[in-house]
Image (cartoon, rainbow, N blue to C red; front, side):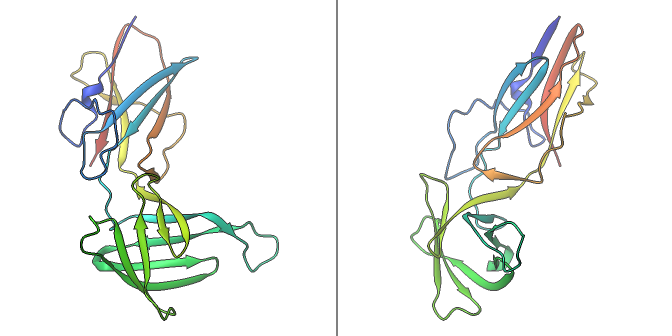
Length: 199
């Protein structure tokens, strides 16, 4: 039996080699992929190496806070940075809306936010070492929507079919961490696998 993993086919519609060894903080890089197998279960870990952008990112505070209703679990605060400089900020059961702007000379890593209900403007700063957002004295992990990642298999590299994963992928991934996909290996003769991003 021969198993082939095509590391050069993790793509956005383009076939490029993707041997990246570090997260590129300033710009998009080719995706990075690693593969392992244990007890006939294959794990494909993909780091999209996405450049950080404020627009479309969701922040979730590391610290959790009690809810006003008895018996419910503590919740983190959440921030959504949206298009056009709009933002939404949830603190337990309260929602705040506002606007943000990227500060000049901050290399795009710092914002100033005006939030309804707050007299003073708030600042948010991305820490390039921890990849956490510091906002209003709290640290936030950052999340982006996950593109449609799939694994395909082929015996001749001409006809490809999608592989069923052992569990569905999440809707989001934590930036800049990898996303893992798992599937059962069916042993046969020659078989090729590739990871793809479906548009």
